[in-house]
Amino acid sequence: MNHATIEQSKEIYDFFLKNRDIFPHIRKDYLERNLTKGNVIYEDGVIVVYGHYQRKQRLGEVQAQRGDYIIHQILNTEKGNGKAGDVFERFFEYIDGNLWLCVRDENERAIRFYEKVGFEKEGKIYWKSGELPGTVFCKRKFDFFR
Image (cartoon, rainbow, N blue to C red; front, top):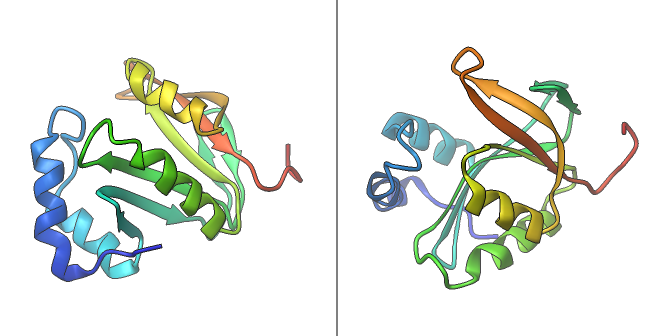
Protein backbone atom coordinates (compact mmCIF):
# COMPACT_ATOMS: atom_id res chain seq x y z
CA MET A 1 0.00 0.00 0.00
CA ASN A 2 1.20 3.49 -0.83
CA HIS A 3 0.81 5.62 2.26
CA ALA A 4 0.62 9.32 1.51
CA THR A 5 3.23 11.69 2.87
CA ILE A 6 2.81 15.08 4.51
CA GLU A 7 4.36 16.58 1.36
CA GLN A 8 1.28 15.40 -0.55
CA SER A 9 -1.16 17.11 1.83
CA LYS A 10 -1.99 20.04 -0.47
CA GLU A 11 -2.58 17.78 -3.46
CA ILE A 12 -4.84 15.45 -1.45
CA TYR A 13 -6.67 18.28 0.31
CA ASP A 14 -7.39 19.91 -3.06
CA PHE A 15 -9.22 16.74 -4.15
CA PHE A 16 -11.42 16.93 -1.05
CA LEU A 17 -12.10 20.62 -1.75
CA LYS A 18 -13.24 19.72 -5.29
CA ASN A 19 -15.71 17.28 -3.70
CA ARG A 20 -17.12 19.56 -0.98
CA ASP A 21 -20.64 18.34 -1.75
CA ILE A 22 -19.64 14.90 -0.46
CA PHE A 23 -16.98 15.91 2.10
CA PRO A 24 -18.03 19.29 3.54
CA HIS A 25 -16.50 18.46 6.93
CA ILE A 26 -12.91 17.68 5.86
CA ARG A 27 -10.46 20.24 7.21
CA LYS A 28 -6.80 20.62 6.36
CA ASP A 29 -5.66 20.05 9.97
CA TYR A 30 -7.68 16.80 10.13
CA LEU A 31 -6.04 15.54 6.96
CA GLU A 32 -2.56 16.54 8.14
CA ARG A 33 -3.07 14.74 11.48
CA ASN A 34 -4.00 11.56 9.63
CA LEU A 35 -1.07 11.93 7.23
CA THR A 36 1.29 12.32 10.20
CA LYS A 37 -0.16 9.15 11.80
CA GLY A 38 0.31 7.24 8.53
CA ASN A 39 -3.44 6.71 8.12
CA VAL A 40 -3.86 7.92 4.53
CA ILE A 41 -3.51 5.69 1.48
CA TYR A 42 -2.97 7.41 -1.86
CA GLU A 43 -2.77 4.85 -4.62
CA ASP A 44 -3.98 4.73 -8.24
CA GLY A 45 -5.84 8.02 -7.77
CA VAL A 46 -7.75 6.69 -4.75
CA ILE A 47 -7.50 8.33 -1.32
CA VAL A 48 -8.42 6.31 1.77
CA VAL A 49 -8.38 7.88 5.24
CA TYR A 50 -8.63 5.19 7.90
CA GLY A 51 -8.20 4.46 11.58
CA HIS A 52 -7.12 1.49 13.70
CA TYR A 53 -9.05 0.96 16.91
CA GLN A 54 -7.01 0.58 20.09
CA ARG A 55 -10.12 -0.31 22.11
CA LYS A 56 -13.72 -1.35 21.53
CA GLN A 57 -15.64 1.35 19.71
CA ARG A 58 -19.40 1.84 19.41
CA LEU A 59 -20.63 2.62 15.91
CA GLY A 60 -24.32 3.37 16.21
CA GLU A 61 -26.06 0.11 17.18
CA VAL A 62 -22.97 -2.09 16.81
CA GLN A 63 -19.53 -2.34 18.30
CA ALA A 64 -16.16 -2.67 16.58
CA GLN A 65 -13.47 -4.54 18.46
CA ARG A 66 -9.96 -3.57 19.46
CA GLY A 67 -7.72 -4.17 16.46
CA ASP A 68 -10.45 -3.49 13.91
CA TYR A 69 -10.11 -0.77 11.28
CA ILE A 70 -12.48 1.92 10.07
CA ILE A 71 -12.61 3.76 6.77
CA HIS A 72 -13.28 7.42 7.49
CA GLN A 73 -13.23 8.62 3.88
CA ILE A 74 -12.62 7.16 0.45
CA LEU A 75 -12.33 9.30 -2.66
CA ASN A 76 -11.62 8.18 -6.20
CA THR A 77 -10.05 11.21 -7.86
CA GLU A 78 -10.87 9.73 -11.28
CA LYS A 79 -14.45 8.56 -10.82
CA GLY A 80 -15.59 5.58 -12.85
CA ASN A 81 -12.16 4.13 -13.58
CA GLY A 82 -12.71 1.03 -11.40
CA LYS A 83 -9.64 1.68 -9.26
CA ALA A 84 -11.50 2.21 -5.97
CA GLY A 85 -12.54 -1.45 -5.79
CA ASP A 86 -8.99 -2.60 -6.53
CA VAL A 87 -7.51 -0.35 -3.85
CA PHE A 88 -10.17 -1.49 -1.35
CA GLU A 89 -9.27 -5.13 -1.96
CA ARG A 90 -5.53 -4.46 -1.55
CA PHE A 91 -6.21 -2.46 1.61
CA PHE A 92 -8.34 -5.26 3.04
CA GLU A 93 -5.53 -7.75 2.37
CA TYR A 94 -3.04 -5.33 3.96
CA ILE A 95 -4.87 -5.00 7.29
CA ASP A 96 -5.15 -7.65 9.99
CA GLY A 97 -8.65 -6.97 11.31
CA ASN A 98 -12.25 -6.41 10.38
CA LEU A 99 -12.99 -3.29 8.35
CA TRP A 100 -15.86 -0.95 9.26
CA LEU A 101 -17.41 2.13 7.69
CA CYS A 102 -20.48 4.31 8.13
CA VAL A 103 -22.38 5.96 5.30
CA ARG A 104 -25.38 8.27 5.03
CA ASP A 105 -28.48 6.39 3.87
CA GLU A 106 -29.03 8.94 1.11
CA ASN A 107 -25.69 8.02 -0.49
CA GLU A 108 -27.06 5.18 -2.60
CA ARG A 109 -24.10 5.11 -4.99
CA ALA A 110 -21.65 4.54 -2.13
CA ILE A 111 -23.88 1.87 -0.58
CA ARG A 112 -24.00 -0.05 -3.88
CA PHE A 113 -20.21 0.18 -4.12
CA TYR A 114 -19.65 -1.05 -0.54
CA GLU A 115 -21.96 -4.01 -1.09
CA LYS A 116 -20.21 -4.80 -4.37
CA VAL A 117 -16.80 -4.99 -2.65
CA GLY A 118 -18.08 -7.34 0.06
CA PHE A 119 -19.30 -5.17 2.92
CA GLU A 120 -22.40 -6.26 4.83
CA LYS A 121 -24.91 -4.08 6.64
CA GLU A 122 -24.44 -4.43 10.39
CA GLY A 123 -26.68 -1.76 11.89
CA LYS A 124 -27.88 1.82 11.95
CA ILE A 125 -26.20 5.04 13.02
CA TYR A 126 -27.57 8.57 13.31
CA TRP A 127 -25.85 11.95 13.11
CA LYS A 128 -27.11 15.47 13.87
CA SER A 129 -29.18 14.39 16.89
CA GLY A 130 -30.98 11.71 14.93
CA GLU A 131 -31.82 13.85 11.91
CA LEU A 132 -29.32 12.21 9.54
CA PRO A 133 -29.67 8.40 9.30
CA GLY A 134 -26.86 6.16 8.20
CA THR A 135 -25.84 2.54 7.92
CA VAL A 136 -22.87 0.78 9.53
CA PHE A 137 -21.10 -1.70 7.25
CA CYS A 138 -18.42 -4.29 7.99
CA LYS A 139 -16.20 -6.51 5.91
CA ARG A 140 -15.04 -9.26 8.22
CA LYS A 141 -11.80 -11.17 8.38
CA PHE A 142 -12.65 -12.58 11.79
CA ASP A 143 -16.07 -13.55 13.11
CA PHE A 144 -15.19 -14.14 16.76
CA PHE A 145 -17.50 -11.48 18.21
CA ARG A 146 -20.54 -11.80 16.01
